[in-house]
Amino acid sequence: MSEYQKIESALIHGGIYGDAYTKAVNVPIYQTSTYEQSGLEENPQWEYSRTGNPTRAALEALIAELENGKAGFAFASGMAAITAVLSLFHTGDRILISGNVYGGTFRVLDKVFNHFGIGYSIEDTTNIEELEKKITEDVRAILVESPANPLLTVTDLGAVAALAKKHGILSIVDNTFMTPYLQRPLELGADIVIHSATKYLGGHSDVVAGLVVVKDEGLAKKLAFIQNSTGGVLGPFDSFLLIRGIKTLGVRLDRHVENAEKAAKFLTEHKAVKKVYYPGLPDAQGYEINKKQAKNGGAMISFELYENYNIRKFFKSLKLVALAESLGGVESLVCHPASMTHASIPYEVRQKVGITDGLIRLSIGIESIDDILADIAQAIAESEE
Ligand SMILES: Cc1ncc(COP(=O)(O)O)c(C=O)c1O
Image (cartoon, rainbow, N blue to C red; front, side, top):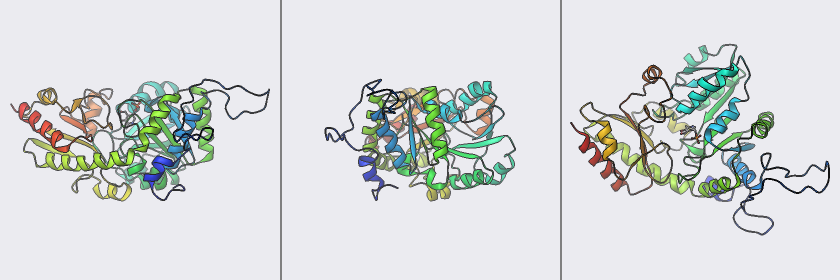
């Protein structure tokens, strides 16, 4: 992976550590748009901060090292990162996407990239044999999330990467839910990893950011060109915040997951709960595959209540767990995918892929699990009709 034997050390010391000039242990915030050049045509290392900035470069080197890639790119949001990756494709190309992906990924393909003649189709990426049948001449990439948002569906990332390789197309993994601490898709053969770094990597719900990592030099050159040409770059201060957040990723995620495993067990045993979606449960779809490709089941859980529980009342009754978009921060959040994160997906498509109106998605934080579970329990009790 890197010069460090364990990712716990690379999280803190990886990429570009500290400041060579002052020996500060933290990378400074180079809050500058431009750099003085010593003369014409002397090819300076830094020329303009859209093209490159030392704080952003430190973050880009760090995420590349953590994902075991060759080059990292930081963007102003996860969607800007996805947009940059989709900008690799041309009119007439088509991309296969997982049945349930983040609503914004669907929306940018459905409402923006279709203007440029780049198509998509939603496929069951968990069924590799069926997926292969969908790879026609025009298909140029497979874009998956595993576990996917919001049903935590697990796709075999190694199998998808091998399939893509066989057909000479790209495999792209949105690794937002897992982070390199729990899962490293490039090591499984994927070509491109994307993050909404807004989530676990930032970890404190105080920054919106996106990252891309690749291992192939040709792809890296193309992405550097797209990043500079389209300009959706991450600013120096937000780059600093991400470097700071990543240092504690390991300890945060250990606690997130410990809490999530307890929450999943609690929900499974609760009489009001009809179904729990959590890849860390032995009877979950893709449990064995997830175990093989990731460290554990992560800290996102979705569930459905029986019909005699009113979910509006449930959301209103929560006190500690906040009803909010996003996930992966230290605080527990809950959302209603059908009307929030996945509202941009038409009703019929949502029904087809299983995002029901009763689905509740939890991002389990690092508070005391007793307080989290007590809050969920009282809100369920309040919602009984
Ligand atoms: C899996 C996933 N990918 C991408 C995004 C988009 O990231 P951002 O909100 O940082 O633009 C999100 C946002 O929720 C997400 O959950």
